[in-house]
Each structure stands twice: as C-alpha cells, then as structure tokens.
Amino acid sequence: MSRKIETKASITISEEELYARNTAAGKLLFTVFQGRHGAFVIEEDRLVEVSFSSKQPGKIGAVYIGKVKNIAKNMDACFVEIAKGEICFLPLKNATSPFLVNRRFDGRILEGDELLVQVVRDAQKTKRASVTANISLANEYFAINFGCGKVGYSAKLSPKKKASIRRHFTETAIFQNDFLIQDVNTLLSISEARKMKSEGMNPETIPLPEIGLIVRTKAEELEPAEYWDAFFTLSGLFVRLLYTAMHRSCFSCLREAPAEFEAVLQSFSRKKSFTEVTKQFPFFLPEPSDKPVSLTEPENSKQLCTETPKPSLGNREIVTDQKELYEQLQEYCTVHHYDLSVRFYQDSSISLSALYALESKMQAALERRIWLKSGGSLIIDYTEALTVIDVNSGKYEAGKNSREAYQKINMEAAGEVARQLRLRNLSGIIIVDFINMQSAEDNRHLLHYMRELAARDSVPTKVIDMTALGLVEITRQKINKPLREQFQKEQKDLLQQKLF
Image 1: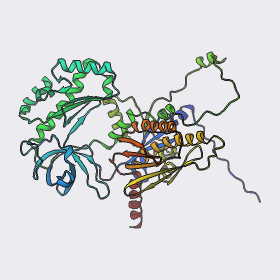
Image 2: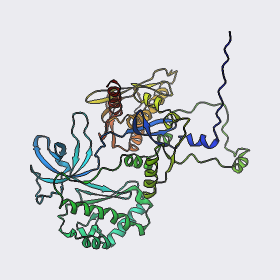
Image 3: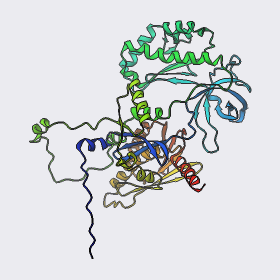
Image 4: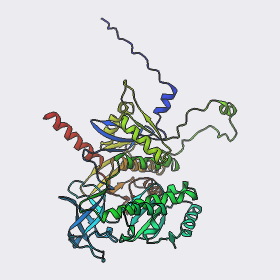
C-alpha cells in the first residue's frame, strides 16, 4: 500500500534576498536566543563573536566616587567600595594620579580616601570587579585620561596627519613638546567656559591631576577645521565630570556604563573581518594544475564590464528583529558617523535566529573538538590556571611532503585559534600545542601570522613566544566572562524555571 506524499511548495528566494543573507563582509545580529538578548558576529557563514546581555547589566566604563576600605601592601593594591557592600580591586599602579575629593593628593593612597574610580572589569567567579583611578573618557577621535601628560598617537595614523594635528594644537597652546598643557583653561573652549560660569560653576577651582591625550585612528578622517570641535566636546565633558565629583557624596555614580550594544558596535565597525586577515596569509597551499596560467585579458572581459553590477558584498551590516533597538542603532550610527547599514528584520515565516542557524552555530561553539577543513582538528581544554589548545593532524594524510602538510595544518589551525579566542572569549594564559615543525623559518612564519591575527582582536591579546617544546604562549586580557560560563549559567537558570 503506497502512501501519497504531498509535495511542499517551493520557495523562491530573490537575488536581493540572497545578497542580504550573504555574510562574506560580516554581519552583526542583535536578536533573542533561548530567551536571552545577544549579539552575534557572523563572517563567511561562521560565528566569530558572541556576547549576551546580562540580567544585571555590567558596569564596565562606569565612574564612581569610591572609598578606600583597606590597603593590601603585599599585593601592592587596595580595595575600594563603590556602593554599599560592593568592594572592588584597585592595583596601586593604576592609581598614579588619582582624583581625591576629600583631601589633596600627596603621593599616598590611604584608608578612608574618597577618589574617582572607573570600572574596567566586572566580577568573575570568585574574583571581585576591578577598577582604575586613571579615569579615561573617549570619543571616536580622542581619549583623555589621568596618569601621564604625554600626547600619544595611534600607530595607524599617517605621519602627515600626526604632523598636522601636532602643529594645530601647538599653535593654539594646547600641546607643548607633545605634552598636554596642564591647565583647566586648556581643556575648555571659550564658549564652554562661559557656559559653565553662567551655570554657577567655577572650573578654575578644580585640583587638576596629570592629564594626557591619545589621538585615535579615526582622527585620520578629520579636517583641520574639525580638530577643535572633536577635542573640546570631549574635554568639556571631562572637566564637568571632575567639577561634579567635587560636589557629590561618596558612592555617587557620576557616569553610567555605556549601553551594552555600544562596545559591540564599536568593535564591529573598526575591525577587519577574519576573512580579510587570513587572506593576507593563505594557509592552503595552491593545488597543482596542468592548465597554463593566462596572463592575457579574458575574451569576455568587455561583456562582463557591461553587465548590470550586482549589489555590493563589501558593506558590513547590522541586522536586528527588535524594533526599539533598531531605532537606537540607527540613531547611534548616524550620530557617530559609522559607515554601517542597519536593517530591521521582520518575517513571520522564519525567525532571524533560524535564518542564520544560530542554534547549530552556538552548539559548535561549545564543543570540545573543532574540525578543520584540512582534516585536522583542535581540542580545547580548560583548567583553573590556563586554557590548553591541542592541534591534531587528524584525518589529514601527509603523503611524501610532510613539511608542507604540517605547515598547512598549523597555519589553518592558527586562524581557527584566533577565531575561537574571540568566539569563546577565552582569557588569561592560553597555551597552543601546534604540530611540531623542524624548520625554524616555518615556526617564525607561524608566530608572525598569529601576531597579525591577535592584533585584530578588540580585546588586548599578546602572542608571547614559542617555547623550546614548540608550545605557543598567548595572553588575553580578562574583561567579560567566557562564553561557556555565560551560556551554562543561562541554561541552569532556564532549567530551574522549568522545574519550579
């Protein structure tokens, strides 16, 4: 007895929709995944970065008036209370030029001191949140901070732009020999100084600590006429923050942490895609071919030039299915001049999460083994002290030329290690056991490639060296919780909700 099977209606996807789904240049998705708001960066249809919003929003970037509870001389640190019962860790090396509100700084930090602190790391496991007394405020073009009066420049700025900025700020008595002149009047435009005085403020009473300036990469886009607005807008906020601190009580929050999407958006907007970086170091060796290489123009080149151009895949895009967030993202990108398109996704037939297969991608992001295209694999194990990543040749058959085979696997593995550091938000000490290569030149090339990839990470990452045993040492700054901790905690919360 045969059973009639109904044929499903075919789904026709337009060319525009196909290009909208293309993730070659990179897409940043904001959506709800398993009941929790998350941000997902996808490149070449692969998940490369994930962050979940916590039920209790983090405080990274927030500025408080804290009180020193006690000094730990053996740790060269102190513990600062920023709210009733909320104690944070402050290394004294990050309090070289603090802003004290209850006395004048004399080179010492004492118990009972009230000072400005900024949260730099949220609490993790048994570790307290970390703060710094070297307060920093930044916009797209400059960053002002305590601790050193020197003016620093992004290494990516052209020499011509550095010289232009240096000349303009020196001529207006803001810089002197690449140091910021330490005077409140230096930090205020004439209009802002008048405005503050009209509001009853006297900024000249501020006991100004040593303040420095960093010129950021995006300053390359500024015209000379725009230097002042970009600088004085930021410096005016900085002076107001200090003046407010002098007239507020202890435990006051003077500056809230930025919206959670801001850090993700800033990182996404300025970062090269993983694909762009790996193309600089192709880890797949060219396959042999019997066909001769043509150095002439193809016959149909003129015909190709006259065809209607397809939509560009070069633009990085933000997609969300949350209406309120969509409007916030649009406004933020417009105000901060981000060259990113923002799209609101609404389709009742398929969710945004299902469209980009986030379920399977997240499952793979938590697996212990990661398979490589070459047939090799990575094994990731976690310990309390460090993370260990082992590179295996796996199913790859070396053949006669084992050197090329191991080089190929190691180069591909290096790219995958860099992706996994971002994706899983691994931090602290990371040890990578690559396949042993006898050639010192191959090892140097591998280290150089790893450093190029680490430089593209938005979290400070440093490739230290390769040990005598062939182990590559990496350190990555601890800022947020690893993905497995975020996800596993969420899974436990959902399970408890179902049980009770």
